[in-house]
Length: 76
Image 1 (cartoon, rainbow, N blue to C red):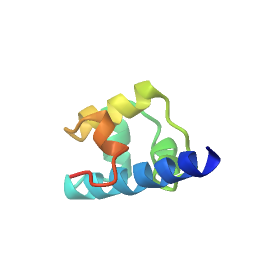
Image 2 (image 1 turned 180 degrees about the vertical axis):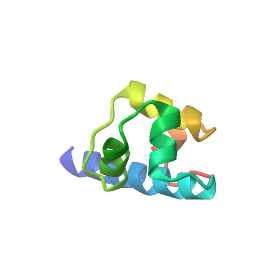
Image 3 (image 1 turned 30 degrees about the vertical axis):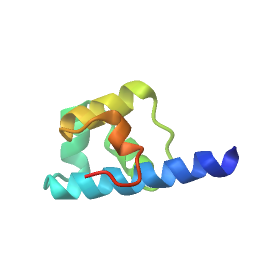
């Protein structure tokens, strides 16, 4: 179970960064628009943070994607 959790955190980290860069947003831009602290966005992108469902939905909305796609290996 722990390995599955760590794998999904890594996938989320990679997808969040990839989509953010594709949308030409800085971590600070994403954080401000999403109403999430910038350091927390950084933690999520480094697979250190564990976002709540609310935070995941806020980030997905800002990135114009669906929350489940942030957790899927082949996002965007």
